[in-house]
Length: 214
Ligand code: 5GP
Image (cartoon, rainbow, N blue to C red):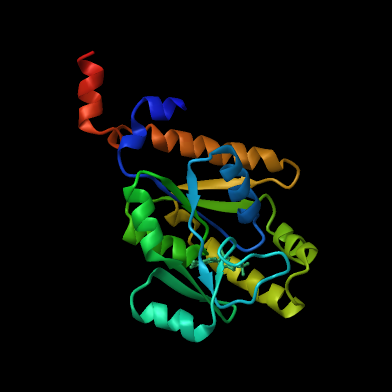
């Protein structure tokens, strides 16, 4: 049992960590690294109309939906937020996050920047973390190395990345994902998670009473 659990942090609703930032900043690797260290994290799997990349699994990386099905779910208010990104629809399913937080689980999700801000509106207690590489030019080299997008798609992602930077100040934290120190950024993310769990308002009143009266 972790210190946080012993102290009763988990007796209340879970925490929502929203990890965002431009495409190529390394969100996927960092969130994977964080989840590997914290078993209690649940990952909010988004839905998308983008076709799967090699190796991506339906229901694990994304729920891959045909556009009519995505639009049907949108119409019945099935998403917390949706966004068109490079011609494809992306959305955060509503019920999973609601239920997981209510059950006391911490949840992590990684939408693009507008999605992150929409999630803060829906859950004002959400913790927004902006990921950037230590040099903007690394975004291009990472996207090129990934070889999953055409040159035109990479150019569009880089243009979007500049727009996304303008929203960095709306986030709670900034983590610089240094090219030469990949573990450091995961340590930084972990530090944020730990600190957030110890915020005084996360402790229910009965737990504080208990600490006073034993
Ligand atoms: P990719 O196609 O590279 O997987 O994702 C493209 C962008 O869409 C990334 O910036 C990713 O974070 C974002 N994204 C993934 N899922 C969601 C979602 O549910 N909502 C929003 N708003 N963006 C998402």
